[in-house]
Image 1 (tube, rainbow, N blue to C red):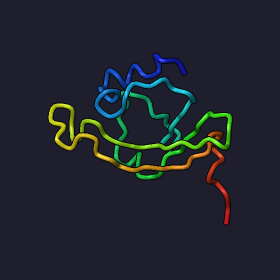
Image 2: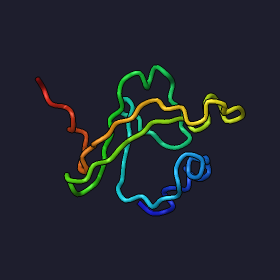
Image 3: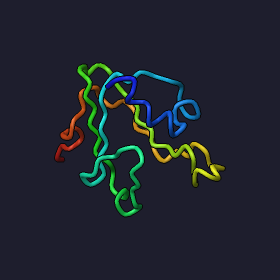
Length: 106
């Protein structure tokens, strides 16, 4: 992913308000019920009731990532009094995670 991949995050003030400027190092894709999360798309509460599927395109299982779902302008952009509301956080995600990660049967 190029530096331009952070542009929507800069426009939405995520870069600077929530995180410092960065250069993406791996591709990450998030899906809710097979609908890809893309900046600017709204997701209804019924769509996000189930956990998302996350794919991380790293190359090294020894590298771990942290994924944080936050709302930088909660409850809405014109009155963000709950700024940076944390919805959930997942740590220690292996660097080569794909759709099969976590789908083991007991």
